[in-house]
Length: 160
Image (cartoon, rainbow, N blue to C red):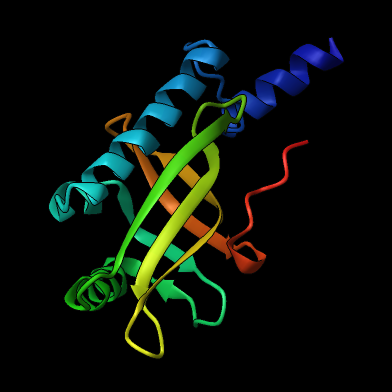
């Protein structure tokens, strides 16, 4: 009786747990594919498609830089980076995980960023990243938070 009453109160107040009907493995595969499509668009220079993977309120945290918040700042950062000859980034999503409710997830992978160094020669740094994703109303995944970290001296990531 108490459980039934508690469940009724929670449902009435709108606190019903949200559980996706889609199997967990399928959701993770879908999220990993979204990150792969995002990486492919960015590598091809298709920036309008690449921008479509970020949420309007997305944030980017990179070492040594202030946070970049919102699509206006993200577009400005990308435009600035793309205006520098030889500057580009590629990444490879390795894993994805999705919450039980199916509305949040993360991807993790590796990246390589190339840019002109202090002497003008191109330098490539490698690192790891984590992207936090939210499923929007249209059921597509949007990146809401991106964090990346360079590896020391461009060394490959240690595998557990």
